[in-house]
Length: 166
Length: 166
DNA sequence: CAATATAATCCAGTATTTTCCAAAAAGCAA
DNA sequence: TTGCTTTTTGGAAAATACTGGATTATATTG
Image (tube, rainbow over all chains, first blue to last red; front, top):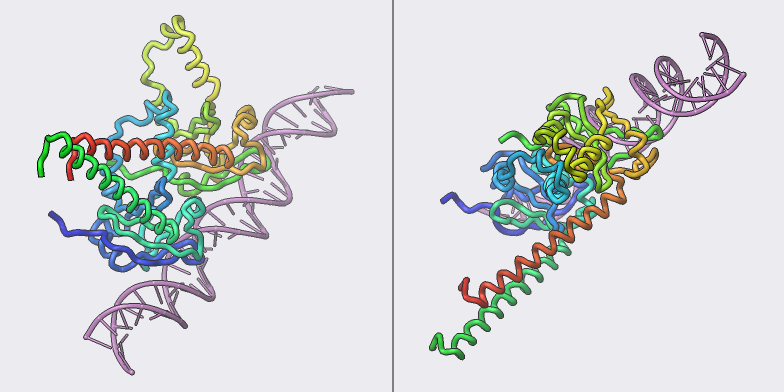
């Protein structure tokens, strides 16, 4: 297996022109990939996903003959909008900066001057507004606890019904 | 796989004569295709779809024996009307502008002076009135959240019913 | 504490968008 | 048809936004 990539969190901020300098450690991970070619994707949970181009292609490759379907299906057109409209090809600049697409800035709360966190996500990097990232961490924790709760209930249930002894 | 085309969102506005200048990035995608030959289609969801001519052909060519079907089916006749009546051929001007067909302006809320968004949809571009696009995004988001919710419930359910163990 | 590396700010050149204006075309009435 | 008005088209100028580099500040390392 290839070496682990895209890990950890780093603070960074959006400059006056709406750009963000990627932390060098994460930058190196991109350079090992397709170099500066990346795809920016505006996630529904309000973070900007940054993927190497080849990773993105893997994500989207299973769509044969899109045009034919688009004519007949509103649902399918929405699908195209969702992936087309909320994604953008870009390259990482020589100085390691990327420009946040102007129309993504407001919804992502990544406006010029705002504080952000770059989060490694194994297949790429996510840029979060600092405050939103704090909230997302809460969500992750909460969700984990619900899973744990479900597990505990299952275990106790099994003991009570004799399918399992301790 | 070919390089990604028709991506992202850009703000633009309708000039006093009912024309819109396509953002340069999307313009380049058209130039890679059939050059200035495009089809304008007034979508039922109230956006103006702009497709390269060849894409449009792909969309419509998988309809064998249209005449025979038209005789039998009201639904099919309606389809023909929609694709016939709500579509026009145009070319992109040397300055990258297209004229919104006058009959489409009112229903699409793309009247002179109004604010719009050009949305890349992988197979072409859609021009949305800004406000209508905001609403459409809500729809997309709502749908995403329902999917997410279902997924979470499925996960906890699987634990409880023993199809998954930690 | 010094040296180095990294991040943030500033500034100017470039590209793009928007507005404005003139020319051409089309419609209309006499 | 002819002359007039209105609409449409094309182009250029002004305003705006974007890009890239360089400089300054901050943090990290030895």
